[in-house]
Amino acid sequence: MKQHIEGSQAVAHAVALCRPEVMACYPISPQTHIVETLSRKVKAGEVGNCQFLNVESEFGALSVLIGASAMGARTYTATTSQGLLFMAEAVYNAAGLGLPIVMTIANRAVGAPINIWNDHSDSMSMRDAGWLQLFAEDNQEAVDLHIQAFRLAEELSCPVMVCMDGYILTHAYEVVDLPTQEQVDAYLPVFEPVQVLDPQDPVSIGAMVGPEAFAEVRYLAHNKHLRALEEIPRLSQAFQDIFQRSSGGLLKTYHTDEAETILLALGSVNGTIKDAVDDLREEGWPVGSIALRAYRPFPSHALRHVVKGAKRIIVIEKDLAVGKGGIVSSDVKMALQGVPIIVDTVIAGLGGRSIPKASVIDTVKQACLEGLEEPHFLDLNWDAINRELTRQQAQRRSGPTPENILREIGAPGASPI
Amino acid sequence: MIQIRIHGRGGQGVVTAAELLALAAFRDGKEAQAFPSFGSERTGAPVTAFCRIDSQPIRSREPVYHPDVLLIQDSTLLHQVDVFAGLAQSALVLINSTRHVDALHLTDFVTQHPGVQMYSFPASDLAMKHLGRPFANIGMVAGYAVLTGEVSKASVNQAITEKFPGKIGELNVTVAAEVYDYVAANLAKV
Image 1 (spheres, rainbow over the protein chains, first blue to last red):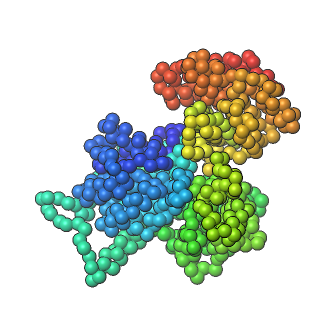
Image 2: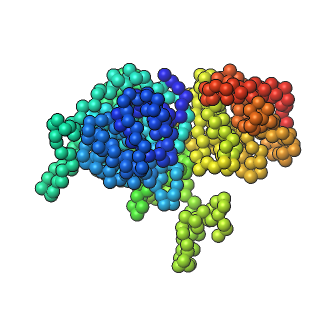
Image 3: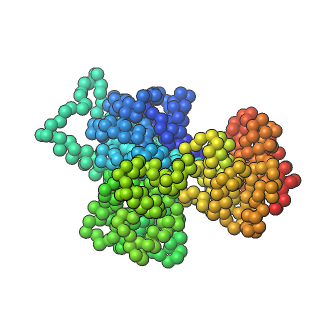
């Protein structure tokens, strides 16, 4: 049924319909509304025989789920930012052990400087941990991807992160078609683990593996992701058959046929990008856009297929590989090796900075007319940066950079420089 | 598309006002989106919330830079925050204040922006009467509904009772009813 609902509430509703058996959560903004709602649903008896554990930390949360998943339970948690970093060791373990845990990432910047707002630095830090990473464009898709994530995780025995933009999606109220229990039950079979700790049939999970076999085990983790490249579209189609709407898949295109310039991004900014594409096309610019749904595995083949004929890809990404530039654009360049196409990197939306449609349009025009420096930083305050760089050169004890920049821009409460 | 920006302070129900507007529009059969400006909210700090209403699905995720409607829940923000930034030429501005627009030192602004319709009315006082608390958010939503007809009164009332089930919802619907009457009877274009 269509409802006007907050993103977090909608996701909690969807997760509850997936009948997880163990949830272990530690609250952190902007994920809090999801886990608060789920804890209330469990207490009200709306999630079957689910156990909700209030744990002491994010590390505890995922460690509990590793144990529960190994016992054959369907498991779920959610986190963001420093919370994800705090569970980092368990993140690698969950994937290395092949445990099909589903985790929402309410994407948020990583400090320092401390910042609670949205970007993709957190999930990017775990991109090579072995989890599948799916990105939602809007709250309908956040709901749908969670349902697909449980099935995907359990079919492959591989954990899945469903990434949704913190605040921009988690705190937005919009229309979402909430699925019914019958639909979810029809889509998501009972969890049949490929490995289970059972006292009646003892096995050990978590063996030490030396140089003689480690690479083989790692290859099999990689192979799982290669299989995911086929499973993701298949399960997206199976979803459409039951729910009567298209959701998920490896990527979604918008006016890419005949497009000379294609914008590519992850997550909610694709909405603004589509509006920008419409405006640009109205002015006669042959542009289109690609929203990557799957970031891990990276859909290299699908990407090569849809950019055929384009001259330029502009990757707009909410992250920064300090010392290099783009993270997503590096993946794109690697995927398009040998394809005669320019790949531009635009770093945007860091720490919650808005990405205005007007800036996207200006950047596309600039890229097509003059080219872009690599990487290009969207809407950066160069005056403040240059003044701070000058100060740093002029005096050894120039002081803490974040505080200096706050003074430079005249932030409320900051003393004058 | 109608783009609405709401200014107030933390604790005044600014975000709730945006949600109520969007929910009411949805009940009217429209597409609607509401979201806050994502500050680290503290009581008393300036807060902004946004609402978009359209007949088409809404894709944009940018803040509302060019509002068609500006709802100002706290008139002390008028000369502290650039509340009029990016205002559309024919925008509607609704201010919660016991004072007339002239007394709010906005006459110059109104003269320079002839397309803008600006009204003030005592939303806090009307809420105080029924709730015993000066929440202006219901008043701003109800005032917008009755002045423009862009969202129906019935849907605003329904949104209020959905958001606040029980006694609190009923009291807030009473506030809305009083605002409908007050605005219809008293507000004239400045």
